[in-house]
Image 1 (tube, helix red, strand yellow):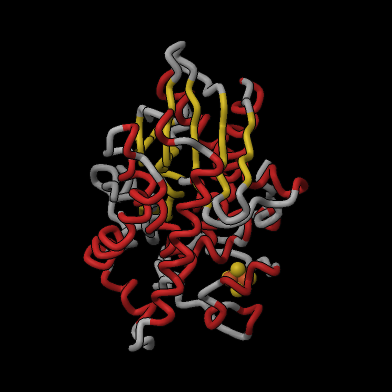
Image 2 (cartoon, helix red, strand yellow):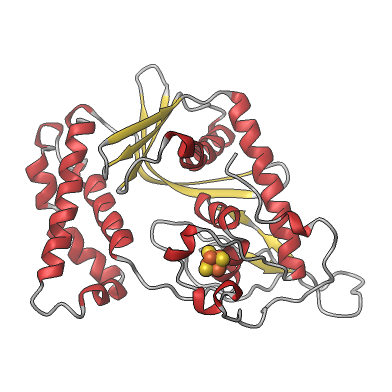
Length: 323
Ligand code: SF4
């Protein structure tokens, strides 16, 4: 977790979710000539792809996750994704010739033990499964995902430059972009490939741009950090056995940067005004917060940050697409 700026106070927003860097919201300390009333809340100091996507999907969901930090139950799908990612990462510890499917599958029990140790709450997933049948099925599904990877990539021919790489870069505006890249490959010629594993299915072509948003986000961070535009962005879909690639150019990264700055400005306005609008979609079915959502008859918890009056233009929030 990152720390707030010197002299600032911040609400307790707790740790980020698994495999994610935390976004932060800070409340500014008193200025030299403090006006009457509480100091205004200031926007998040940083953005990750997941939280940016949250805001684009539903501003109220972003609020519940980043500002209220409402707890969420672990899901079987997300936990399986975390497990499979850990297995694929650890397989590269072995010599190239030993990176076989049986070896990868043999890593699953140990990585599941490690996951339960580091995140005891995931054990609750199978608390009502005393015979272990559902757990066994779930582990078999994880094996199938690991096995499918070998039909898409050959790890014996890969030597990743980085695995589970935490990256963070600050834009000229002061916004920090951060995240964790599953794998970075660097060719002998210096070309960089960013790889992300997905345990779900590849999106239909008309939704591919949304899927690539995260990858362009990472490409922007790498460009800002290393002054190198990644040659290729690669999404490996283990659920459907597809590989989606995109070769970005400078204009892509500049467009994503403009997009993120607009997003950050919208988040700043919502942070100050407390005007976080629900944006119901079919994705609400996966939202843990329906009990607090007005769209489902719920009431959000009291807003924990100081407020100022809404300004015009706030109504734009929630209409942003990934690009
Ligand atoms: S239920 Fe839907 S509209 Fe409500 S907070 Fe969740 S994602 Fe947003």
